Image (cartoon, rainbow, N blue to C red; front, top):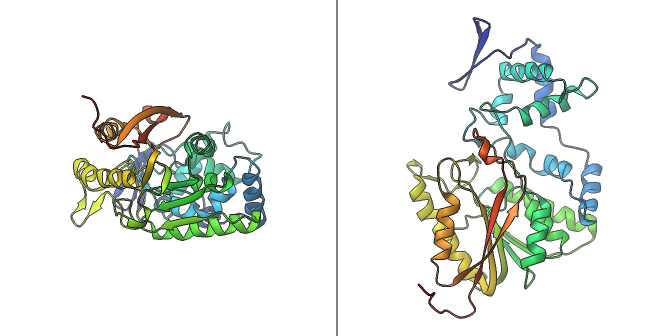
Length: 347
């Protein structure tokens, strides 16, 4: 790692990647270390418990929950368009100095009356660009709406668990939650979150979360769920760095076509088997990175003789990290239902 000045520009090199920028200001190493340590600090347990109670009462803020259970894991995620993950960025003092400089230059969003740490995390969140970016999270109100509209037997399967939002919605709507995710560290945090929610709110909502990929069939889940709703990985958009991720095999990153064949298609096949007749499969995905993911998955579902298209729901204001602006627009949720009788579709 090095930081050198060249014609009023600085070149910061870390992990064999470089950033050329006019944003850089010297701050001592101990200040960098303080910022780094505070980034990993968990909120007070009492604040987390209060937020879990408020979530049960219908409130939607999840900032303490995210910071307590998932922030350190989210920091490991490397976004496709970014050079480093948040965790990798924090390992480099000169990259901390880069963000510090940007923070000082943007007093509108980083006002002096707020703490240094709050302003620093704000500038990382909104100004990551191609440097380091946070992964996206799901809006809990959208999950509530899907559950309220399409839950028909109180058993809901989430085939890509994500950062706990769909679990929380299921818990507060008193719907049995079944999930799968190959990230073993995330799996443990989800179990902890579920246990804490039930303890604090004195509830006993059933859950069954498996630490495995959704492409692996689970026989005991055949025709079990009235609703399956999830948001699968956007191919290589977010590299979670933990567990047997769907984008990797023993040769490295799969091609998009191989990823579709080895992950998306088997997952959809399993989901159709898991649905009860008349059950709903709702899936959030978007065309991005010049890849027609929404179109391709819609075609797969449309061509399945056991499914019928029902509707398209809107998922508003999701911020998927990307170097292109068109990702930060409304996304859609395609909804299909499983036929009650296996009759061929009309051509």
